[in-house]
Image (cartoon, rainbow, N blue to C red; front, top):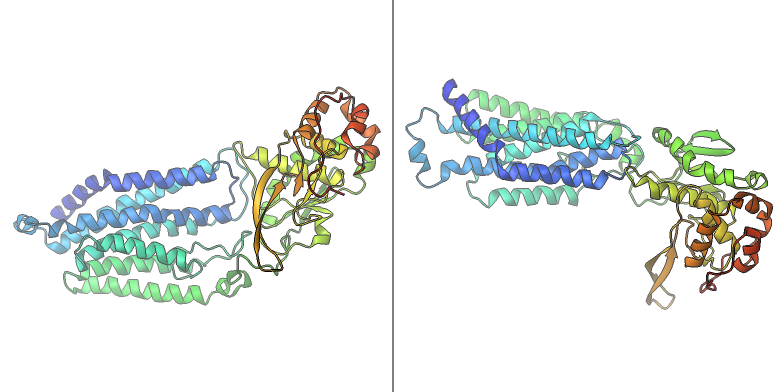
Length: 487
C-alpha cells in the first residue's frame, strides 16, 4: 500500500510538473503582474493583496489540471486497466490530490517569490507588508486544486471544472468585499487598508481541508476521512466566525466605499517634515517617499528668486478618492499614493515639479480650476517661466486632450474636449515649450528670471514683451489663447 501510493504520487508529480496548463498560467501570472508593476513603486499594502488575487489565474489552471488528472479513472477502459493494480480508487484519489497540490503550491510560491523579487528592483517600498495575504494566495491555489479533485469524483464530467472556475471568478469579482471569500480582493481604502485578520487564513485552510476530505469521502466514510472532514468544517466555522466578529470587521474603513466623498483626501497625512523652506506631509507608512518629493521640488524652488519663496505651498499627500477642500488645495500641492520607478519616475518627478512651478508662477493648480474646462495660458510669459522651472527637474511636455460628458440644464449630454497638463487643466502650445527649452540654454537664464520675476509672472505679460528680458529672439510663432485665458 505505502509503496504503491508513493509510486503513484511520484508518477503524478512528474506529469503535473510538465503540465502545459500549469506552466503556461504560471508564466502568464508572473508576466502580467511584473508588467503591471514594473514602473510603479511598490506599496506593500496593495501589492500583497493584488498578488494574492492574481494567483486566481494559476488556481484556475490548478483546478483544471487536477480535475483532468482525477478524471482518468473515468476514461473508457481505464478502470479495467487499473483493476489488477494494488492501489484502490481511494488511494489513487489521495495520490492525485497530494501530487497536484504539492506541484501547484510550489509553483504558486515560486511565482509570488519571483514577482516580489522584481518589486525590489529600483524601488523604495512603502506600506504595510502582510505575509498572511501572500500565504492566503497560495492556499487559494491549493483550494482550487482540491476542488478540481473533488469535482472529478462527485461530478465526473469534463464541463464541471470550467464551470467551477467561472463561478469562483464571478463570485470574487461580483462580491469583492465579502470577507468569507478565500481571498478578499477589495481594498476599501488605499492607505493601510483594513484587511481580514489572521483568522481568515485559518478559514481558507479549513476550506481546503474540507474540500480535500470531501474528495476522499466519495470512496466511503472511514473514521480518518470523517475526522479530517470534521476538522476542516470546524476550522471553516471557527475561522469564519472569528473573522466576521473581529475588530477589523467592525472598523469604519472595512465598510467604507471606495467612491466615498465624505472623507478628506489628505486625512491622516500627518507625518510632516520641513526641508529647505518646504513642508512635506505624508501618510505615516509613506514617509520613505519624502526624499523623492524633495528631489522633484527643491530644484524648482532653488531657481526662483528668494522673494518668491516666502509663501511656498506645502506638499501634502492625498488619496485618489475623497473630498478636496478647495481652499486648502489653493495653497497645497498634493501628490497621490503612487510614484514611478524604472523609468516611470520621470512622469512622477515632472508632475510634482510642474505643480510647484505652477504655484510659484500663480497658476490655479492641479486640484482647482477657474472654469470646468480649465484655462488657456498661451502667449503668456509666466507659462514659459513655469515650463522652464519644470525643466530644472524633467523636460516639460505638451498637454493632452481629454473628453468629458457634461449634462446641460436641458438634460442633453455634450462632449467637451479640454486640455490636461502637468500644470493642471491648463492649455499651452508648442511655442511656450520651445521658448522654455531655449531659455534653458541661456547661460544667465536664472539671473534674468530672478531680476525680472515680477514682470514675467504677471498674467498680463505676453511672450513677445518678455523675450528681450529673457535674452531670447522672436522667431517662433505664438498662438493666441483659444479658450478662457488663465488669470
